[in-house]
Length: 277
Ligand code: NAP
Image 1: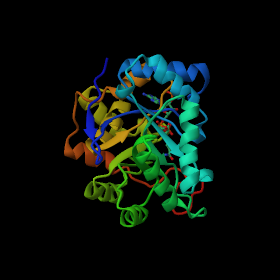
Image 2 (image 1 turned 180 degrees about the horizontal axis):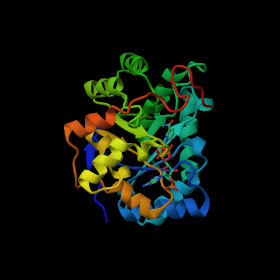
Image 3 (image 1 turned 180 degrees about the vertical axis):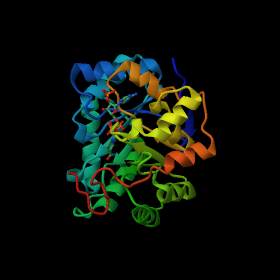
Image 4 (image 1 turned 90 degrees about the horizontal axis):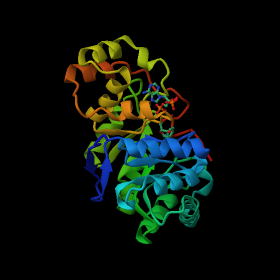
């Protein structure tokens, strides 16, 4: 079994350097895939109300046979549940669907500027933490300007910001802001949903130099950037490959060469405009 290292978040809680994305892992096959990941050594399952699989995630936690304190579950408040009381209610509904008595990391899924309530929603997450419904709180898809406002107006810094991050969109400026404020960067679509990333020449050359696969090079690049990637795979073999990135290191020149693939967001996900209810 792989031993995935952990870091300590700004609230003192532990957090793995790599986790499992669960978007599209549904039904019995989804549960089996998640249990296989826990058997391989994964200790973080990333879900959201909008993935429609919180029931399956809760079931995977129970079937994993792991002590509840050894496996972290992340969920996310959707745009349609924004607001202080609404977000607390949303979290209570997530807990009921998961069949768990605590969410380990609760995020706001998107800021949804048209709703105009991400600040109240953050206050709801703070309240949920005070009530013991969730352990750590953070956000997803927030910009430095939004993070600054959250911190200034509530005095509570998010533990994590989960954002689109892959070699085509390395998010240098945002990561520097996170480092300055002690916010852990978490990378969604860390493999750029596979796309043509894994066949890029530079990735292939670095993979050959280390005798590893292109996927492992990309996921090691995230680790080198101090970001926690959450690759999704339904396949136990690919899950193991993806998590097997802690026994080699990239040189600074290799890290820079991979980051030079930058070309911007791959999807229409600018948090200042993107709406997801
Ligand atoms: P991803 O993890 O970058 O890529 C997943 C795709 O890559 C799947 O098609 C998977 O297929 C394939 N894959 C995985 N490992 C592979 C390997 N070793 N070799 C070849 N192909 C491989 O993309 P993602 O699912 O969009 O992102 C990951 C997670 O981030 C999601 O599941 C979700 O939890 C989270 N997310 C969050 C947000 C947000 O707004 N906060 C947005 C998007 C995603 P197989 O399953 O067949 O292996």
